[in-house]
Length: 325
Image (cartoon, rainbow, N blue to C red; front, side, top):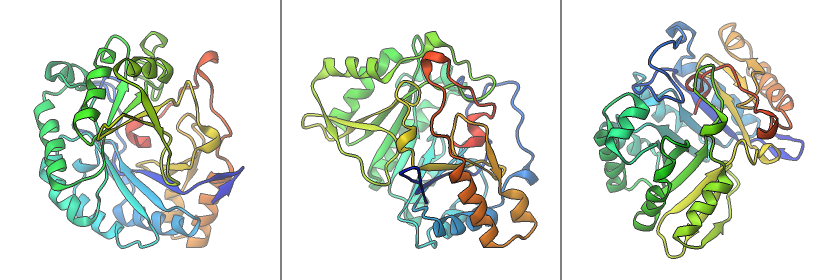
Protein backbone atom coordinates (compact mmCIF):
# COMPACT_ATOMS: atom_id res chain seq x y z
CA UNK A 1 0.00 0.00 0.00
CA UNK A 2 1.43 3.35 -1.03
CA UNK A 3 0.34 6.74 0.29
CA UNK A 4 2.05 10.11 -0.13
CA UNK A 5 5.20 8.36 -1.38
CA UNK A 6 5.26 6.12 1.72
CA UNK A 7 5.11 2.36 1.20
CA UNK A 8 3.11 0.76 4.01
CA UNK A 9 4.38 -2.81 4.34
CA UNK A 10 4.72 -3.39 8.08
CA UNK A 11 1.99 -4.35 10.59
CA UNK A 12 2.61 -4.38 14.34
CA UNK A 13 0.11 -6.50 16.25
CA UNK A 14 -0.61 -6.33 19.98
CA UNK A 15 -1.97 -9.79 20.76
CA UNK A 16 -2.70 -8.97 24.42
CA UNK A 17 -2.65 -5.97 26.72
CA UNK A 18 -1.54 -8.14 29.67
CA UNK A 19 2.04 -8.20 30.91
CA UNK A 20 4.10 -9.85 33.66
CA UNK A 21 6.06 -6.63 34.33
CA UNK A 22 4.90 -3.24 35.57
CA UNK A 23 7.34 -0.86 33.91
CA UNK A 24 7.03 2.65 35.31
CA UNK A 25 6.75 4.24 31.83
CA UNK A 26 4.24 1.73 30.45
CA UNK A 27 2.06 -0.13 32.92
CA UNK A 28 1.99 1.21 36.48
CA UNK A 29 1.22 -1.13 39.37
CA UNK A 30 -2.13 0.53 40.01
CA UNK A 31 -4.79 2.09 37.80
CA UNK A 32 -4.61 -0.09 34.69
CA UNK A 33 -7.91 -0.95 33.00
CA UNK A 34 -7.37 -4.11 30.99
CA UNK A 35 -9.55 -4.97 28.03
CA UNK A 36 -12.01 -7.79 28.92
CA UNK A 37 -10.90 -11.03 27.31
CA UNK A 38 -13.97 -11.37 25.01
CA UNK A 39 -13.08 -7.97 23.54
CA UNK A 40 -9.56 -9.07 22.60
CA UNK A 41 -9.20 -10.35 19.05
CA UNK A 42 -9.07 -14.14 18.83
CA UNK A 43 -6.12 -15.74 17.11
CA UNK A 44 -8.43 -16.65 14.20
CA UNK A 45 -9.42 -13.01 13.83
CA UNK A 46 -5.82 -11.85 13.91
CA UNK A 47 -4.83 -14.40 11.27
CA UNK A 48 -7.66 -13.24 9.03
CA UNK A 49 -6.58 -9.61 9.36
CA UNK A 50 -3.01 -10.57 8.44
CA UNK A 51 -4.13 -12.59 5.41
CA UNK A 52 -6.25 -9.73 4.14
CA UNK A 53 -3.57 -7.13 4.83
CA UNK A 54 -1.08 -9.03 2.68
CA UNK A 55 -3.44 -8.39 -0.23
CA UNK A 56 -2.76 -4.70 0.38
CA UNK A 57 1.01 -5.07 0.49
CA UNK A 58 1.86 -5.92 4.11
CA UNK A 59 5.00 -8.06 4.08
CA UNK A 60 6.28 -7.79 7.65
CA UNK A 61 4.51 -8.53 10.93
CA UNK A 62 5.80 -7.83 14.43
CA UNK A 63 4.02 -9.48 17.36
CA UNK A 64 3.93 -7.40 20.52
CA UNK A 65 1.82 -6.80 23.61
CA UNK A 66 1.66 -6.25 26.53
CA UNK A 67 3.82 -9.31 26.68
CA UNK A 68 2.89 -11.74 23.89
CA UNK A 69 4.32 -14.81 25.62
CA UNK A 70 1.79 -14.58 28.47
CA UNK A 71 -1.13 -15.33 26.13
CA UNK A 72 -2.13 -19.00 26.05
CA UNK A 73 -1.76 -20.78 22.75
CA UNK A 74 0.89 -18.39 21.45
CA UNK A 75 3.16 -21.04 19.91
CA UNK A 76 0.32 -22.72 17.97
CA UNK A 77 -0.75 -19.28 16.71
CA UNK A 78 2.80 -18.50 15.67
CA UNK A 79 3.02 -21.71 13.66
CA UNK A 80 -0.18 -20.82 11.82
CA UNK A 81 1.08 -17.31 11.12
CA UNK A 82 4.07 -18.79 9.33
CA UNK A 83 1.67 -20.55 6.96
CA UNK A 84 0.85 -17.13 5.43
CA UNK A 85 3.48 -17.35 2.72
CA UNK A 86 3.04 -13.78 1.46
CA UNK A 87 4.79 -12.57 4.61
CA UNK A 88 8.51 -12.03 4.16
CA UNK A 89 9.33 -11.39 7.80
CA UNK A 90 7.76 -12.21 11.17
CA UNK A 91 9.39 -10.87 14.31
CA UNK A 92 8.64 -10.79 18.00
CA UNK A 93 9.04 -8.18 20.74
CA UNK A 94 9.21 -9.62 24.26
CA UNK A 95 10.32 -8.50 27.70
CA UNK A 96 12.33 -11.72 27.95
CA UNK A 97 10.88 -12.99 31.23
CA UNK A 98 9.53 -16.18 29.62
CA UNK A 99 11.98 -16.29 26.72
CA UNK A 100 14.26 -19.04 28.04
CA UNK A 101 11.24 -21.36 28.28
CA UNK A 102 9.70 -20.52 24.91
CA UNK A 103 12.75 -19.78 22.76
CA UNK A 104 13.24 -23.31 21.38
CA UNK A 105 9.62 -23.52 20.17
CA UNK A 106 9.74 -19.96 18.80
CA UNK A 107 12.82 -20.91 16.80
CA UNK A 108 11.18 -24.09 15.51
CA UNK A 109 8.23 -22.05 14.22
CA UNK A 110 10.60 -20.00 12.09
CA UNK A 111 11.32 -16.77 13.93
CA UNK A 112 15.00 -15.88 13.83
CA UNK A 113 14.84 -12.21 14.88
CA UNK A 114 13.96 -11.03 18.38
CA UNK A 115 13.48 -7.68 20.04
CA UNK A 116 13.95 -7.81 23.81
CA UNK A 117 13.06 -4.88 26.05
CA UNK A 118 15.73 -4.31 28.70
CA UNK A 119 16.15 -0.89 30.32
CA UNK A 120 18.94 -1.65 32.76
CA UNK A 121 21.91 -3.99 33.12
CA UNK A 122 21.74 -3.64 36.91
CA UNK A 123 19.46 -6.10 38.71
CA UNK A 124 18.38 -3.68 41.45
CA UNK A 125 17.61 -0.91 38.97
CA UNK A 126 15.80 -3.35 36.69
CA UNK A 127 13.57 -4.19 39.66
CA UNK A 128 12.90 -0.48 40.25
CA UNK A 129 11.95 0.17 36.60
CA UNK A 130 9.88 -2.97 36.04
CA UNK A 131 8.45 -3.59 39.50
CA UNK A 132 9.66 -7.20 39.35
CA UNK A 133 12.87 -8.98 40.38
CA UNK A 134 13.29 -10.80 37.06
CA UNK A 135 16.60 -9.50 35.72
CA UNK A 136 18.35 -12.87 35.92
CA UNK A 137 15.48 -14.53 34.03
CA UNK A 138 15.63 -11.95 31.26
CA UNK A 139 19.39 -12.19 30.91
CA UNK A 140 19.18 -15.99 30.84
CA UNK A 141 16.60 -15.67 28.06
CA UNK A 142 18.93 -13.42 26.04
CA UNK A 143 21.90 -15.76 26.45
CA UNK A 144 19.73 -18.76 25.65
CA UNK A 145 18.43 -17.12 22.49
CA UNK A 146 21.99 -16.38 21.40
CA UNK A 147 22.96 -20.02 21.96
CA UNK A 148 20.00 -21.16 19.86
CA UNK A 149 21.17 -18.99 16.96
CA UNK A 150 18.63 -16.16 16.97
CA UNK A 151 20.04 -13.34 14.88
CA UNK A 152 19.82 -10.49 15.23
CA UNK A 153 18.97 -10.13 18.88
CA UNK A 154 17.86 -6.55 19.38
CA UNK A 155 17.85 -5.06 22.85
CA UNK A 156 15.48 -2.11 23.22
CA UNK A 157 16.40 0.52 25.80
CA UNK A 158 14.10 3.42 26.66
CA UNK A 159 16.53 6.16 27.69
CA UNK A 160 15.27 8.18 30.68
CA UNK A 161 17.28 10.94 32.29
CA UNK A 162 17.99 10.34 35.95
CA UNK A 163 16.72 6.78 35.75
CA UNK A 164 18.95 4.78 33.38
CA UNK A 165 20.74 7.24 31.08
CA UNK A 166 24.00 6.68 32.99
CA UNK A 167 24.05 3.15 31.49
CA UNK A 168 24.09 4.26 27.85
CA UNK A 169 27.78 3.49 27.41
CA UNK A 170 27.47 0.15 29.23
CA UNK A 171 24.80 -0.91 26.74
CA UNK A 172 26.90 0.38 23.85
CA UNK A 173 29.88 -1.68 24.97
CA UNK A 174 27.73 -4.80 24.62
CA UNK A 175 27.78 -4.26 20.85
CA UNK A 176 31.58 -4.35 20.93
CA UNK A 177 31.55 -7.75 22.62
CA UNK A 178 28.41 -9.41 21.26
CA UNK A 179 26.47 -9.40 17.96
CA UNK A 180 23.59 -7.67 19.72
CA UNK A 181 21.76 -4.72 18.19
CA UNK A 182 21.22 -2.23 21.02
CA UNK A 183 18.52 0.29 20.17
CA UNK A 184 18.07 3.43 22.22
CA UNK A 185 14.49 4.74 22.10
CA UNK A 186 13.43 8.22 23.13
CA UNK A 187 11.03 8.26 26.07
CA UNK A 188 7.57 8.89 24.57
CA UNK A 189 4.34 10.28 26.05
CA UNK A 190 2.06 7.28 25.53
CA UNK A 191 -0.87 6.52 27.83
CA UNK A 192 -2.48 8.58 30.55
CA UNK A 193 -0.05 7.73 33.34
CA UNK A 194 3.34 6.81 31.88
CA UNK A 195 5.16 9.56 33.77
CA UNK A 196 6.53 11.41 30.74
CA UNK A 197 8.13 14.71 31.65
CA UNK A 198 10.39 16.99 29.65
CA UNK A 199 13.17 16.71 32.21
CA UNK A 200 13.24 12.91 31.76
CA UNK A 201 13.67 13.22 28.00
CA UNK A 202 17.02 12.35 26.35
CA UNK A 203 17.22 13.11 22.63
CA UNK A 204 18.95 10.91 20.07
CA UNK A 205 21.37 13.79 19.37
CA UNK A 206 22.52 13.72 22.98
CA UNK A 207 22.75 9.94 22.91
CA UNK A 208 24.86 10.08 19.75
CA UNK A 209 27.26 12.56 21.34
CA UNK A 210 27.68 10.29 24.35
CA UNK A 211 28.23 7.24 22.16
CA UNK A 212 30.96 8.99 20.19
CA UNK A 213 33.06 9.15 23.35
CA UNK A 214 33.59 5.40 22.90
CA UNK A 215 34.73 5.72 19.30
CA UNK A 216 33.64 6.79 15.84
CA UNK A 217 30.35 5.42 14.54
CA UNK A 218 29.81 4.38 10.95
CA UNK A 219 26.26 4.51 9.59
CA UNK A 220 24.56 1.38 8.27
CA UNK A 221 22.04 1.54 5.47
CA UNK A 222 18.49 0.40 6.27
CA UNK A 223 16.63 -2.32 4.40
CA UNK A 224 13.16 -1.95 2.84
CA UNK A 225 11.34 -3.67 5.72
CA UNK A 226 13.33 -2.05 8.52
CA UNK A 227 11.71 0.12 11.13
CA UNK A 228 12.72 3.70 11.94
CA UNK A 229 16.04 3.15 13.71
CA UNK A 230 19.10 5.02 12.46
CA UNK A 231 21.71 2.29 12.47
CA UNK A 232 25.40 2.60 13.38
CA UNK A 233 28.36 0.40 14.22
CA UNK A 234 31.61 0.95 16.07
CA UNK A 235 34.61 -0.04 13.96
CA UNK A 236 35.04 -3.84 13.93
CA UNK A 237 32.23 -4.31 16.45
CA UNK A 238 30.11 -7.46 15.97
CA UNK A 239 26.95 -5.65 17.03
CA UNK A 240 25.07 -2.48 16.11
CA UNK A 241 23.67 0.65 17.67
CA UNK A 242 20.20 1.92 16.75
CA UNK A 243 18.73 5.33 17.57
CA UNK A 244 14.98 5.90 17.41
CA UNK A 245 14.06 9.57 17.67
CA UNK A 246 10.28 9.47 17.53
CA UNK A 247 10.01 12.91 19.13
CA UNK A 248 13.15 14.86 18.25
CA UNK A 249 13.42 13.46 14.72
CA UNK A 250 9.97 12.19 13.88
CA UNK A 251 10.10 9.96 10.82
CA UNK A 252 6.53 10.36 9.59
CA UNK A 253 7.62 10.92 6.00
CA UNK A 254 9.12 7.43 5.86
CA UNK A 255 6.97 5.55 8.39
CA UNK A 256 6.00 2.21 6.83
CA UNK A 257 3.75 0.77 9.55
CA UNK A 258 0.25 0.25 10.81
CA UNK A 259 -0.64 -0.91 14.32
CA UNK A 260 -3.39 -3.37 15.24
CA UNK A 261 -4.48 -2.98 18.85
CA UNK A 262 -5.31 -5.91 21.08
CA UNK A 263 -9.03 -5.12 20.76
CA UNK A 264 -9.06 -4.89 16.98
CA UNK A 265 -8.56 -1.21 16.15
CA UNK A 266 -6.21 -0.30 13.32
CA UNK A 267 -4.03 2.76 13.88
CA UNK A 268 -1.87 4.64 11.42
CA UNK A 269 0.17 6.49 14.05
CA UNK A 270 1.26 5.89 17.62
CA UNK A 271 0.66 9.54 18.53
CA UNK A 272 -2.80 9.85 16.98
CA UNK A 273 -5.89 8.33 18.56
CA UNK A 274 -7.57 8.02 15.16
CA UNK A 275 -8.53 4.36 14.70
CA UNK A 276 -10.38 2.18 12.21
CA UNK A 277 -12.58 -0.50 13.79
CA UNK A 278 -11.83 -3.92 12.29
CA UNK A 279 -13.29 -6.01 15.11
CA UNK A 280 -16.92 -5.10 14.44
CA UNK A 281 -16.64 -6.08 10.78
CA UNK A 282 -14.81 -9.28 11.66
CA UNK A 283 -17.55 -10.32 14.09
CA UNK A 284 -20.32 -9.32 11.71
CA UNK A 285 -18.86 -11.70 9.11
CA UNK A 286 -18.10 -9.00 6.56
CA UNK A 287 -16.16 -9.93 3.42
CA UNK A 288 -12.42 -9.81 2.90
CA UNK A 289 -12.99 -7.04 0.35
CA UNK A 290 -14.73 -4.96 3.02
CA UNK A 291 -11.88 -5.54 5.48
CA UNK A 292 -9.33 -4.59 2.85
CA UNK A 293 -11.22 -1.35 2.23
CA UNK A 294 -11.01 -0.58 5.96
CA UNK A 295 -7.29 -1.29 5.98
CA UNK A 296 -6.83 1.02 3.02
CA UNK A 297 -8.85 3.67 4.87
CA UNK A 298 -6.39 3.47 7.77
CA UNK A 299 -3.56 3.97 5.30
CA UNK A 300 -5.30 6.95 3.69
CA UNK A 301 -5.89 8.50 7.12
CA UNK A 302 -2.30 7.96 8.23
CA UNK A 303 -1.12 11.35 9.57
CA UNK A 304 1.53 13.25 7.67
CA UNK A 305 3.19 14.23 10.94
CA UNK A 306 2.69 14.19 14.71
CA UNK A 307 3.25 16.93 17.27
CA UNK A 308 6.90 17.91 17.64
CA UNK A 309 8.78 18.18 20.89
CA UNK A 310 9.19 21.94 20.82
CA UNK A 311 5.44 22.57 20.84
CA UNK A 312 4.72 19.86 23.37
CA UNK A 313 4.27 16.38 21.92
CA UNK A 314 0.79 15.07 21.41
CA UNK A 315 0.03 12.40 24.02
CA UNK A 316 -2.08 9.47 22.92
CA UNK A 317 -4.65 8.24 25.41
CA UNK A 318 -4.25 4.48 24.98
CA UNK A 319 -1.52 2.73 26.96
CA UNK A 320 1.32 1.28 24.94
CA UNK A 321 0.41 -2.23 26.10
CA UNK A 322 -2.83 -2.24 24.10
CA UNK A 323 -1.38 -0.43 21.06
CA UNK A 324 1.65 -2.65 20.71
CA UNK A 325 5.12 -1.58 21.79
